[in-house]
Length: 162
Figure (cartoon, one colour):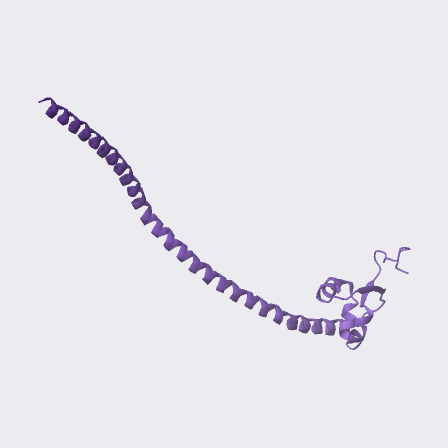
């Protein structure tokens, strides 16, 4: 009753959830949690917070007092479960702050090197210009030596003629 031939629950039927056998003892110890785990609206919550298989069962009656008590118990459980998450978040925040500090140090080092390079680059350009001038002057000096050699040869020729 309430299930299709394939074993699934038909629309409109009340579907409840109970835990796998390995978790059954723990749930049996707490009827409030068991009553809560049998509600279909809490299936996503239970299936994501625990790593146990759940089996579908049919449930006829549910006492509202048990439901309220189970909700209260679940609230306490969730509050307890939040603490490790908050601690992990705090650890990650500290890690992020440390990484930001390291990144700031690296940034300042890179920025200092960049500033140094921007100061050096104009000097390097001037060095290149001076090198060009020196090459040109070297060529001029070579031309001068060549001319001096010719003049000396001409003087020797003139001395030999006279």
